[in-house]
Amino acid sequence: QVQLVESGGGLVQAGGSLRLSCAASGRTFSRYAMGWFRQAPGKEREFVAANSWSDGSRYYTDSVKGRFTISRDNAENTVYLQMNILKPEDTAVYYCAATAVAGRPALSYEYHYWGQGTQVTVSS
Image (spheres, one colour):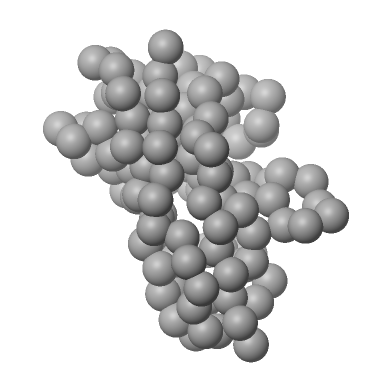
């Protein structure tokens, strides 16, 4: 079992930055791909970014490339999402997720563990 707790959401003006954190329980954190998803009101949950455990790659949805950076600290069992140049369309609840699936999982059903979510609101 893996438990995930997100933090770092909040209200920010367009162009600003936020860093989300996700603390994970468990002793095999390094063997999980860690991902971030988001869900805006009235929309489906969408993939944002992830860090593969099997090849170490980091990958992003096109709309956040160049603005968001995912990173992880295996010693601290924590994954981060640094979000820069935020836009109003980034407003959503952001969820941290974990999976033991190898490769580059990017679909919701591939992730087996989820945090409770943290709200990010970007004002124009």
